[in-house]
Amino acid sequence: MAEGEDRSLDEAFQGYSERGARAAMLGLADLDGVLRGKFVSLDKLKSLMRHGGGFCDCVFGWDVADELYEHPPGAAWQGVTGWDTGFPDTAYRLLTSTERRLPDSEAPFFLGEFAGDAGDHPACPRSLLRRVLARAESLGLVAQCGFEYEFFVFKETPDSVRAKGYRGLAPVTPGNFGYSVLRAASQADLFQQLLAHCIDFRMPLEGLHCETGPGVWEAALALADALEAADRAVLFKTFAKSFFAQREMMATFMAKWSMDYPGQSGHFHFSLHHRDTSASPTNAFAGDDIPDSARWALGGLMRHTPELLPMLAPTVNSFTRLVKGAWAPTASTWGVENRTAAFRFIPGSAGRQHIECRVGGADGNPYLVAAAALGAALLGIEQHLEPGAAVQGNAYDAADELPAEFR
Image 1 (cartoon, rainbow, N blue to C red):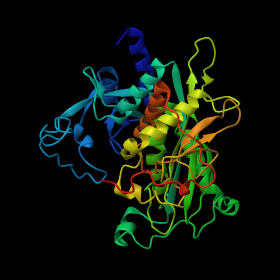
Image 2: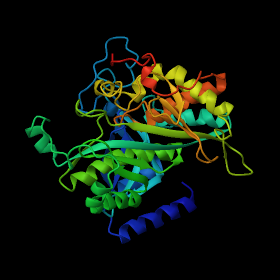
Image 3: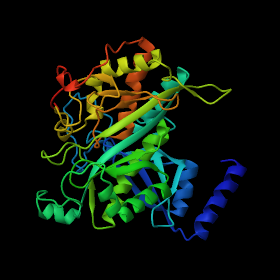
Image 4: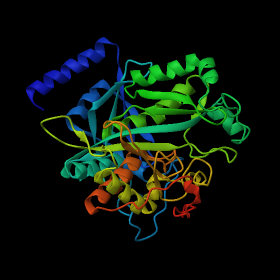
């Protein structure tokens, strides 16, 4: 580290001490998009900033319940992580650009990425997205993205839901009342607190409202560059949960927690922009009609989504959401301003024109969702794939093309 960088680092740590911070928190995303991490001392943080660190790679070898995956002999995953590797530490680097202040604390918070001098870790979802974005840059394109999530909020705690056997849970509000001003106004303090919480943690929302279902909310995160947008989405799913937990409530981002209600979506919005060093990037999807780049991107999504579906619908529960008439697509279709299609092209002003991928649920890993959608779109642009005719009216009338179960 150069002398000037050392001085900047010392100044940063002086600031931590002056505000009363005694430790820092680190977070790294696993394959499910769950943040795994730890508190470290400020001395350890300084060492990590200078030299990087190591973290047990078991986080790539287990599920959300910490149950280790079994790999049959010869499986592609062998040698990546598992009993056969001994679960060593894998190198990670601290991402200083992601620094935030931990909510209700003086402690700094940082994201990390599993990548060392030897290159990217093959199972790191953030590294995969970075590689897809490098592919975009090689085509002279940059991505602007935004995530929106539906999630249910319950008047429950982890102990109470277990005691009830996960049945008969009490939602924070009863019955269906989508876009309800009455409910939002009645809970204005809670809504405003969550909005402020998200601003303070640098994951701002551009919208927050009640959706259709008992206790279901929808949050739309503000648009950002692709990697920042995915970082914010990962952080939101964790720190929205901690926000409600501190208030004796519980939020879930399951794709479908009850068969009595529609599932919880995790829609992904994106546009690709021409990188121009002499001016601001221009939207490649803008035009009076749907331009070639947008049409080819839709063609790539249509062609490759069935194969990429495990990245958008990663669990058995994910597929219970993908049923007809439940606000989730069942076929690889596209349409203009059509919410029954898998891919919705949204027209408007040059800055607003973009594609919404409506396939994924709220349970998806944001890094993998973005990598899958952007990767498919880029393949479509590279190969000039045509999407076919836009669906008119009810896309559920189309023949089912998406797999109906996880296997």
